[in-house]
Image 1 (cartoon, rainbow, N blue to C red):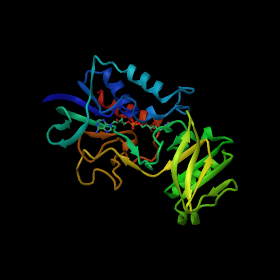
Image 2: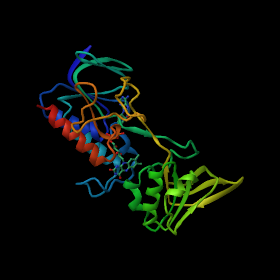
Image 3: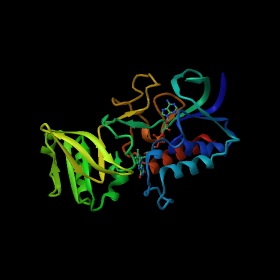
Amino acid sequence: MQNYNVIIIGAGPAGMATALYLSRSKQKTLLIEKSTPGGRMLQATEIANFSGVKTDSGMNIALTMFSQIDFNNVHFVQEEVLELTSDDLIKVKTNLNEYTAEKVVIATGFVNKPLNVPNEDTFVGRGISFCALCDAALTKNKNVLMYASTLKSLEEASYIATLANKVYLICNEKLLNFVELKDNMEVLSNAQITSFNGMFKLNSVTIKQDDQIKDINVDFAFIYNGYTPSSKFIKYDGFTDKIGQIIVNENYETKLPNVFAIGDITNRPVKQVGTAVGDGSFVGSILVK
Ligand SMILES: Cc1cc2nc3c(=O)[nH]c(=O)nc-3n(C[C@H](O)[C@H](O)[C@H](O)COP(=O)(O)OP(=O)(O)OC[C@H]3O[C@@H](n4cnc5c(N)ncnc54)[C@H](O)[C@@H]3O)c2cc1C
């Protein structure tokens, strides 16, 4: 079993920021990523609110972050973490290996719950978005459809309506008692999305409404169907909140000694590239000492 001073799980912006600090230190560090480094940024065609980058694709930002890490000092493996247990040392079991570490940083983010509708994957980042804070600015004078499963997402729809030409809304209509709709918002009652359509970019959404099939021309569709935090490899009572986000204090410490969590996987409310990098830099700067 190989032993490390620090193991970082997840190479999204949070994990890569921590790895950058540790790559410039003497700590023997392992960065474990189950997929391509970059995390959810890889789905973003354009990121325009990450300070220092005027505007660029998530892919380019991810490549720059990855290339900044000194891999002479950080060991990188493409493996999926299946279990984390804590004793004197922390044990991390992957699909291929077992490792031990003195300290572990969990930066595994979350996955958006899909609607499982045809062409949904194709248009993510090409018209389909999960984040008004990220993409509302792109909807200026455009037509938008919003699938809103929570009150918070309805509030985000109202915010988008301040910029967009028109916002079509598919939602749990009981929630409508708690928000005031703007004049350019239209509720599509009893409607279900049956497909997303377009060539390179989204240009319409097909819906089934009261047994009728209709195409609605839209440039953007925001899907708020909840999300699943990637934390199922840790099974300690009270480690996560009820939806699976890891509970941290102001120093990103979890309920387990020497186990930190950063970025979108935590119970902190803002989930952005900038906040993920901020969390990762904070923990990285503590761990280099
Ligand atoms: C379409 C889209 C557009 C966006 N636009 C913007 C924007 O404009 N501005 C902005 O600030 N933010 C934007 N975001 C949000 C931003 O991408 C996230 O907030 C950010 O990537 C979170 O970083 P993270 O490192 O915490 O997690 P993630 O980026 O989710 O990275 C987590 C990593 O952990 C890996 N992982 C998960 N489980 C395991 C495991 N068991 N073993 C090993 N590895 C594992 C994953 O494969 C992933 O690479 C956008 C997101 C999407 C989807």
